[in-house]
Length: 254
Image (cartoon, rainbow, N blue to C red):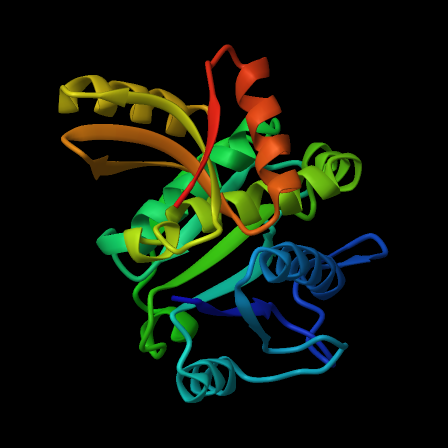
């Protein structure tokens, strides 16, 4: 099953979002949205963008467009801000409630960004946000650091490609079992256990390190795997990251 994901670059047009010095949130949001979307498309995801240029839509229009597209997920990208420069720093992911696959995906995205050096502020419930409340599919809002934090801006600039890759990997790795079982998908396996507790232990370790890991039960074994890639090269890159972190790996297909 191919998934359809709506990616939303927050703000736009006459709405710049948060502004710090000459930096506008709407520009960072669009740059990251397009970069994440490109990686998802390369891995077989049907990506729909709320905007690809500097235009404005209301949150209600964004939610309506996602619903009309029949999307499976809605992910909105933003940068945070505070009343005083350098007051806060870090990343957080907002959800309507902490339930279901959206919560798992939010945790995986948060952990992946934390692995790159961002302070993890947590997954937080924001049921009042229109794009989380009015969308009919699982929805997340990613706050990729504070725009008025020099530390976060330096990370955003210096590690931009890694940020986009990590977010995309976290999304792909969270997609449900129906996705990862499709033919011609490459996955990186880090262990196969008869005891579920041993598999859970490895899963928790991987997710704590920011890897988009999951457990697949097959032939009475609990298999711990990471990612779901249509291109072998992307699986090889993930395998190298895992091996650098001390894991024994094998690339499998299903």
